[in-house]
Amino acid sequence: MTDMKLALLGRRGAGKSAVLVRFLTRRFIGEYASDANSLYHKRLSIDGRQLNLEVYDPCSQSSEARCILEEPVDWADGLVVVYDISDRTSFIDAQSILRQIREARTDNCKGESGVPVCLLGNKQDLCHARQVREDEGRRLAQESRCHFQEVSAAEGYHDIAGLFTRLIRRVMEHLKHRADRRRYSGSKSVAKLINNVFGKRRKSV
Ligand SMILES: Nc1nc2c(ncn2[C@@H]2O[C@H](COP(=O)(O)OP(=O)(O)OP(=O)(O)O)[C@@H](O)[C@H]2O)c(=O)[nH]1
Image (tube, helix red, strand yellow):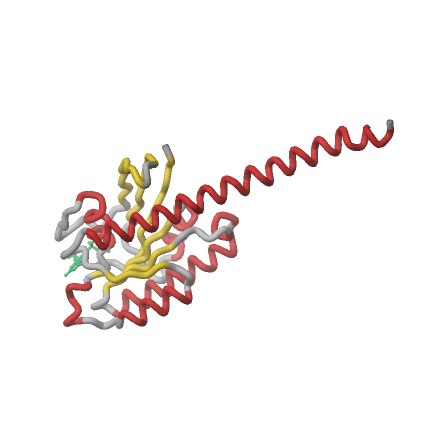
């Protein structure tokens, strides 16, 4: 059983809870309490592997709320940044959040190894009121080296399920890579230790 932690970030009202609940329950629920942090648990099987998934849906962030942002960025193995295509301010917040994630990547060792991130333009059903073009989202994702997709939590399950599945696969690869690297550097230090102890002795014989 693999333990995996994901977190959603984005401006108030972008649809983080709607996206997450759609993925976890296949349902769209119109309104959610937005004044509390929520931690969801789910057991999943992906590519024949059992997963123990925890997803953190923190209460709303704004670009200034750096202290709130740092907590999930440090905690999570994968991140979903959500904006609302009919609300440009939510896109500007997403830009700021992605910049902060990039800075955190260079600041902490978990980030250095590149925690997978996905940028999500939600409320695609409101394209008549669109304020953010799809190519702007795509370009931001390219600059931030993350995956991008537009979805509608209100209208569809499959796009959202596909997106989370791809993110989870990338996180699994990333966790494996990180574990391999730790094992390798661990075995290197054991080899070094053995060499220090026995290698030197051998020389003196
Ligand atoms: N039309 C439309 N409305 C949506 C969609 N997703 C969410 N909403 C609505 O947008 C509003 C905000 O959704 P939430 O999921 O609570 O947004 P949030 O980002 O979790 O907001 P906070 O909890 O305040 O941070 C609610 O009224 C939802 O019903 C969507 O895909 N299309």
